[in-house]
Length: 89
Image (cartoon, rainbow, N blue to C red; front, side, top):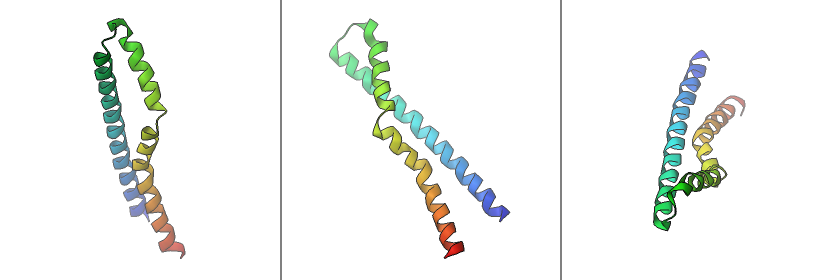
């Protein structure tokens, strides 16, 4: 039993690292996309920070960010589901 708990902690730690890495990458990618769109629109440089901040607020509310939680949650649900099936059915 203790071995399973140890394995679940290791899996949880690995999934946490993967989630954080993907989250940071996608935020960086969105910021670069917003910077490129700003340059293409040829706006005044003083509006750049506001433009990027507004775009990142939109990203924070996006479905893509919420789906990224699936990378973290889905494997854990599968593991717990298999453990439940193996032990109680």
